[in-house]
Amino acid sequence: MTMKRKQSIGKRSYDTLKSWHKYLGIALSLFLIWMSLSGIILNHPDWFAHYSVPKALIPEDYHPQNWNREGVKDALFIGKDTIYFGGKHGLWISTDNGYTFEKENSKGFTTAPYYQKINDLLWLEKENKILAATYGGLWIKNLTTHEWHQVDLGKYSNAQFVKVLRRKDELIAFSQSGVYTTTIANPEKFIPRTLLRAERPYMDLIQFTFALHSGWLWGLPGRLVYDIVAVILVFLSITALYITLRKNFKKSGSCRRSKKRLGWMIRNHTRIGFWSLGILLIIGGTGMFMRPPLLVALANGKVPTKYIPSPILQNPWYHTLRNAVYDPAKDRIILDTTEGLFEGKGDLSSPFTTLEWDVNIFVMGATVMEHLKGDEFMIGSFYGLYHYKEGDPNAYDIIMNDTVPLYTSVGRPGLYMIGGDFQTPEGDHYISAYGQGLLPFKQVDPNRFQQPHTLRDSYRMPLWNYMFELHNARLFRPILDKWVIIVIPLTGLLFLVLNISGAYEYLYRKWKK
Image (cartoon, rainbow, N blue to C red; front, side, top):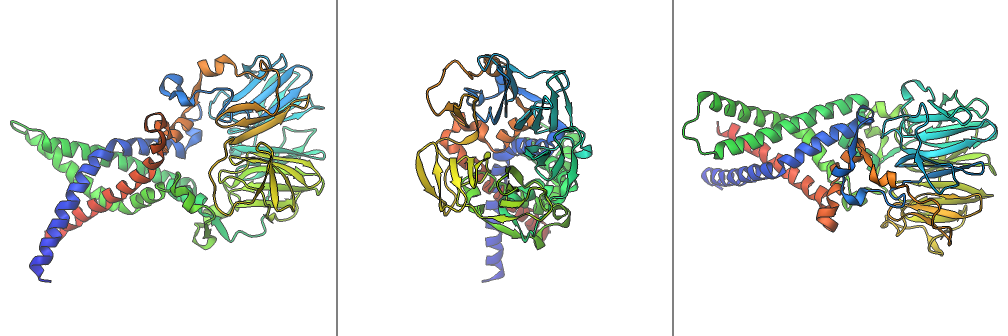
């Protein structure tokens, strides 16, 4: 091939990619701005925990109905008439045996909407206190004084807690990254414990991809670097719009200042875009896998720990713990983590080791883990609710009344995506399904446990959750319907093309000079 022909092909490629870069930049600019700003908020939930979004800005599909969207993850029945419901809509109390509910607003409880979300509740009957595992630490309510206070855990006081277990005369509380213990008689004095692990040869690929996408693979410094990159992406998007619109705007005579501003934007858009190319490709490439259908491709994947930055390995459980259950029959604790099930001694004295159970747990984790008797457990997730006897090759689907083997690959969520369950003192069993809300297993009083009108009428979504729904595009489901599933992978692919075409355009110009 002659040099002249090579130059001709290079020029045609340049013209094509330049056109792609121009029009993709215009099409994606607003999308990239909202993804960048929402990404910063998602990276720092503590910074924005006190902010929420009014109902008027939230699609109707998100408005609570029948306690749906994990509105009831746990329930406490205290005395004759008092009931507490805790879940993603905060903490609610009934003093008439469940016929009316009011938002818990006793003195001292957190006012931050994000922190008010509840994962677990525990009643300490003898001490007349309740303990709440929230997205913003551990909280204790004195039922005598009706006052709340937060357990002081130092810099981890606002950590997200997933479960509080009762073992003999002690309490064991699990956050996403660690464990704390105290005596039942002194629930205000939790102390950190070392949660041992036999080995960690790998990191779950889904967790690794999420960590790489957000920067927390390198801890706080990594997140701050990604924040800067997000600001850069906003700059690139705004300058792309300005450059394109300014060039196409018919002018009777451009002033020197305007031309100078345009030149500055072009130079810095190309230079900054090129020198941030690597990290932008990482963000775009990993972002494609943040949602189904491509997320499924990461299931069961593993990344050897030798490729993981050392800071995150200092705690082998960092951001991995999702649920836990105490087995009194064997005095052991079973953990559900992003890397599977683990078991260890109840006193935490030995390393936790992997546990293989033939029960299906959805990729997002077990939402229900309860010990029933002996070696029998209740396990719930977005697959459904199962009665599982350890050692059996199958689990029993309680809702569908069917025996289910262990799936060989990642399956679709079940018809009833379980967010929680509870039993009343009368023995009535309820499930909390993500879509359908609170459902009983048999006919019950229909007026009991009705969602209060104030929850829907005055609904506000925590800003972090709103940005999460915006970031993964689910907020547009009412408009795009089933096609919303392709928004993230498609825009992620177009973002990669945008960056590669821009880099080619920059290098071609430098080569021509």
